[in-house]
Image (cartoon, rainbow, N blue to C red):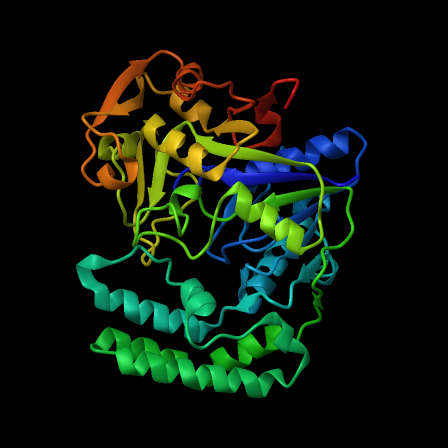
Length: 406
């Protein structure tokens, strides 16, 4: 019988979901199983999950499943936004890291025909619109994910088998016209001028013409891992608008995708948290601590000019409990980056918000109650009222220890 693991981030993203996916796959193989199928089922190429192998190799998995180092296949499910050019770039980078041929890696990837295709011109509209917001930025990554999934000019992976060049020209023309209608300054006009150049069209079309399987069923597998994008605190229904993603990031959403793929099997949902909270870009962040950010410099997430700066704060049990409540039921809890906090001479977590009861209403004005603790893992477990099933004291699979039941 097929077993399904779902890996959900319970923060604002960057919780270490990729490292847990890699660990789950390696554990299954060590117990005699075959490499799993990883289904990336929401989000898009902006959701980047870093994996560090025991021998020190590093790859940022943006569209490929984060268990690809151990031979896992990847299926991009229908709610995933796919950038074909970025996917080909990632395949080439992974091939360089692993020594495999990019064509062999590509053969392990399947795409649902319902996947929205993200193009450079969706990104152009996105960037122009975000620039016009000025001080009211949403914190978009500038990749065009929302425009590709929810905007009026969309295209889908199922169109690859038809006259795709003609269709791509139509989409480019429509999106450039849309961006031009929004343009109001030299920056926006420069973006549109660059996006209009022929080399961008030719590069995207070349990537789209490379052979890749489009299928509406997931490949057969005994072990399936659903790898979520972003974190649940960015969920379109339960996050803090307007700083949300177009995706739903909950157990129920994962179950709906599984049923749509005709996968009806026992599901174990893993909730992943950092030992401290972090946020990339704009939006409310009650426990943010600029001084802590200097003590915990980010190892993999760059300061992105579009998404904004990488922000850090103490672990916030109020937000964690809120995410567990709406995203669950959560069967297993994994906490990452414990080694980084353990190395600090003083450690804290946020146990409550002063005079606040409604998380959604009070998030922008919350005054966190910060409590010094000796051991962060123990403090998190007590604050959540449940055991930590996997404690991660480093980025590698070997750095993770789990309870017997996990």
